[in-house]
Length: 160
Image (tube, rainbow, N blue to C red; front, side, top):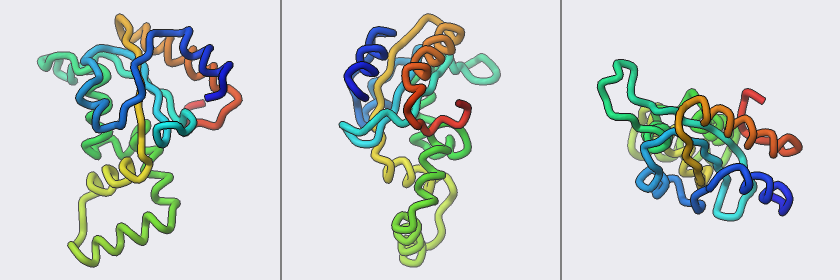
């Protein structure tokens, strides 16, 4: 993020520190909010997403918020949505990553799609920061505002 972009984003909310995805899953709160992703500790922002309460479809589970959304990606279950899909698509376009996956398959046998999706996130070296809000509606608005600060930057978000 350039200086002006960083100032604009930082003025929108109180953001956490950048954390590797594995740490973010443990540290992110079970509250609604917005998260940004970048490749590597100092890479550019590549994705902006949001999480609502995420209490499950039946409403019986406790709200999972940001932590739940990030955990879905890290589990490999998010291979066809959001950041998980974006990372998987880019890994699949990298011949070196494909060769590595094929070599591992030849050595250890086939793996499930979830394992490939997790490997894609590892390949992408994702770092996350987040900001919490009161509810899903506020998360959508903060996501919209945050995305607007990156209007001139190419992001992995599909719906832009």
